[in-house]
Length: 426
Image (cartoon, rainbow, N blue to C red; front, side, top):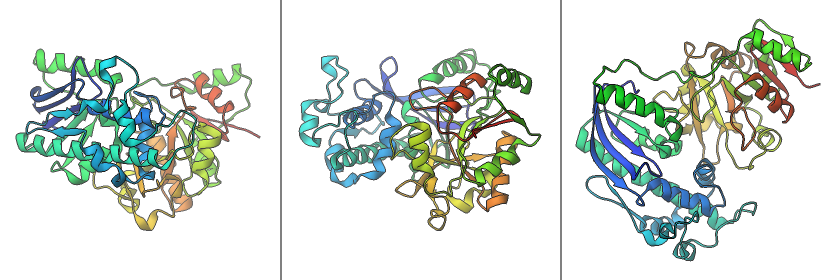
């Protein structure tokens, strides 16, 4: 599904049937395996362990661990964490299993040895201690370093210019950003539904291309492949709910005016995205120039941890003005640095380490979202919006007008732009 005719291939997950990582090479419609690692030697499980250590849910909250890591010092525990994992000359991963608890068939990932070295784990709801932050930082750093080592091996074996990554670990956008900046590959491709939710898609294309030998005829660069609703369908829902609303021919202009004033809006437009990231169809949007916006949305809208960062979306033409990223990032899966001279201009989307998980927006893929960002830029001089998924923590992203209205009235959102209609709280 990547745009590349030829590419190195890397799959990294908790586990498949038994494989946990897979190195390969793709050319045309054929792929071949170079090497595999097998459970329990798993980078995904390695990261699950530190996620559980930090008091989060495994196989669900790994993104929280990634967001927590920049708050710690990776050097405090990095040398200890490096003892856990090694990579052989073929890119296979090996772990010191004495740090883990697999043999007991338990959901508890960490062994007593793990706690002896890294300290007392955090229980859900407890305050973070400094060692929790430092351990998260060290595991994140070692994950990145290990995958970069694998990338070097894979490049040397394939000499391919491009890399395609899949599996749940490929959603670690900080790791992806380092691959873009530091590996020998020119760019990487990560399909938006790169985790378990994309397995059926991958299986179908493997059958069609690799087994049936049918030509590749589809490149997945457009994430908007879900459901959509007409204005008539939306208005019927609004009338049925007896909600006051206004109609605007140019909803992007009205939404940009609200963002300029510091309002937080729900943005329900067009065809829904695929994958876990909101990419401008089912999004909560705000003006990143307001320093208090991150804390306000975390506390009053998303109801989640205060440290959690928010991502920026910008039009592709403005990318280099604000962000240090040479390639496109349409799926919000590559973390880059906010340019130092711009960090004070967009503080609500600049993480504590100066980074941001950027989405670049093209007019031809989502013209209404593109126009909103462009119009905000005309009004403020900053064509960047804070973009987070349209949901409350623990719930799926809203799919239907019913979902959107329920979320709107359950949160501190100021307004919702749904189709050409606007609802505001008075």
